[in-house]
Length: 542
Image (cartoon, rainbow, N blue to C red; front, side, top):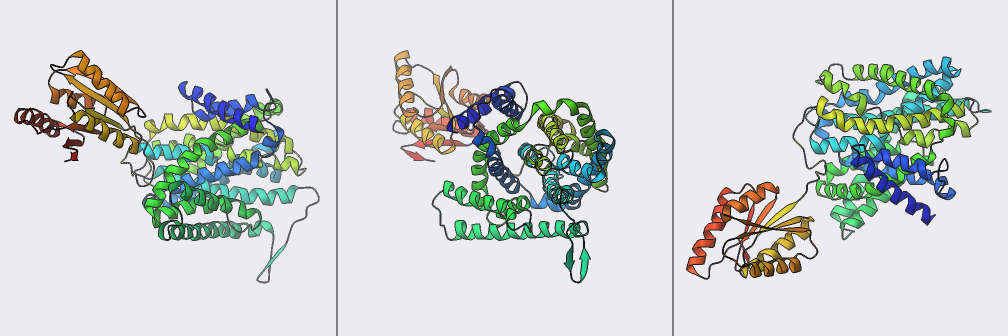
């Protein structure tokens, strides 16, 4: 099993990186890597790992749902609340019905079996949609109208609905099962009559349980300080979120997916500093979880069952998306402030299938439902077609269809490359400048540009400065740059060229002439610099 895990991590990472360098989403490479490693091709993944794929997938989905919850914006959700609710129910419902109607003549299904296929195909993939929407938020696309937040919320709600209907249909269609009758307040209700109440119950209880869990975590981690560092915070929160995901297997009265998203959302509202630390930690966890999720997803795809249903399967996907979903998107955004471009963005932004299809696609076949093999094949086809297409189309179409707004760094992690500029001469003050720059770089994992403007220094002196730089910045990525010309102008221009975040410069004052000369350099840099300047004098910061 350890060999299989090594294969999964290394192949998933490197093939994903190759895909990214070819301007394709990394998950396409990861899925391809899973197909190559899986039983269809190389067969190097141990059978126990494949058997445990659902467990790995559950952990990965927990991570991505926490990322989604920690990235939601309450103000944007209130602004687009009705749109988000409609996106959660209308497009999925119309897609399921459209697929069911087309499946009857194509696969000779009856209507309930067609609905079962529609529930599997209509579910949206949090593993594709969540990271894509969070990336759009970090870049500012669509944030003014809360479009990524509406898509995230609608995706979670639609999965709640479809998973409930799927469970009812499996029980109804499985051989030997009879329809269960429930007595409620003297009324006799069938499972279908109970469905609206179950959807409402799962949503309400999911929100309440997510809120209570967030209150508990804030009390433990924020107020009582039971943990000593961020790693321990992430450990406690991740275990809590995973518990919320698996608890509905034993107490099926709420949506575990929705509870985890709600917990992340309420953590932002109750303790924003804690939420910020958790956001960074779950971003790191996702690096590993993503590889496991999509490589195992690729390994679970059975290519040999796709041949007979390829064309009808593509037709089913096209009808469900281009007719059912697009009609649902139009109805969901009626009366909103979305323009036609933003509505069109829902086509690439809200159509990806992967996680849910991999989790439930094989259940009808395992339960002996007629047509289960065809359902599994169409589910696999939906993953192969829509997951890579959605992951590729979202970043491509967003700049063309969405407007760019102001980024809220309190809701998403904004990845920035931090570069510091250390301006040094050949005097003793250069040691203090380099030492201070190194300390700042270690805190923010920054790169350093060491700039020396040559005036009347000998080559030997510059070489000594380079050796000093190599010694003091041994554990930091840096670049040593030498230029000639006006010292203040070269410092400011270098800061512009390398897009630095801060400038660190020294100021000497033990000789009147040098005080005037170097003081004028630091003063000129401060007056003309567009970034903060740290000035060191006698080991003190000014």
